[in-house]
Length: 341
Image (cartoon, rainbow, N blue to C red; front, top):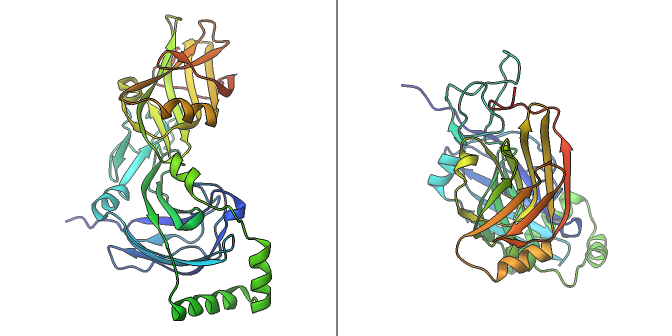
C-alpha cells in the first residue's frame, strides 16, 4: 500500500491596494492531518490575489483558519474563523495544472500526482516539469472584513471562496488583541493612536472587489480569415484575481462556462512556419462591466485577428467592444506540438 505524500504549500497574504494593508495578530490554519500551519509573520503585501512573496513551506491539507488581524485603514481588529470545503481541498491539493505542452503527447488541463507525463522540455530530451503542483493558499484581505481565499498553481489560480471576518467587540478579546499587536510591533499606545489617524481611510468598502467576483456565462472565440490560422495557447488574468491557461486540446473544445471578467488576455497563434505571433488585450474595466451588466444567457467574446496578422478587433456578441490596448509581438520562443515546421 502506497502512503500518500503530505501536501506541501506556502501561505500568502495580500490586499487590493497598499492603503488596505492589514497586520496579523494571531493565526492558525487548520489541516486535515492535524499538522500545525500558519501565515507568514507580519502583514499583507502585493496585489489582489498575489502577495508577491512566499515564506516557510507549510504541510497538510488546509481545512480552515482562525485569524485575528488589525486593519489600520479603519482602526479595527477583526477575527476570521472559517471552515474550507474539505472534499474540495482534498482534491485541489492533489492537482497539477499544465503550463506547457508535453512533447509528442497530448497534454491535459490538470493531472493528479503520480501521473506519468510530468516531464517535458521544448527541443530537448532533458526532463522539465510541464505541470505546476499546488503552490500556495492565498488569503486576500479587502476592506470591511471581506476575505477571499484562492488556490495558486502559478499560471492557474482558483477561487476557493469568499468569507466575512467579524469585528471584535468583546472587551477582553479586544484588549488581548491590542496588547498582542502592540507587543509584536513594539508600539506605545500613543504611537498606535497616531498611526490610526494617519492611515484611516474614511470611505473604505469592499463593493468593488465583490463586483469583481460576479461570474457570467461566456467563452472567448478566436477568429481569422487566414486559412492557415492556428491558435495554441490562451492565458487569462481575471479581475477577481483568478487565472487560467488554455492549451490544446481543451482550448479547441472551447466550452461555455461561468467565468469572472477578464483583465488581461495573452494568446499565441501561427499562420505559417515563419508567422508566429503573441497577442495581448488589456480590457477597459468600465466598458467591460457595463456591457456585461445588461446581458444574460450564453455569451461570446470574439477576438478577430486580421488575415495579415497586423491588427486585432474585439467583439462581444458580435458588437464591437472597446478595450484599453491591443498589442501584437513576434513569437520567437514558443514551440508547440502542432507548430508549422
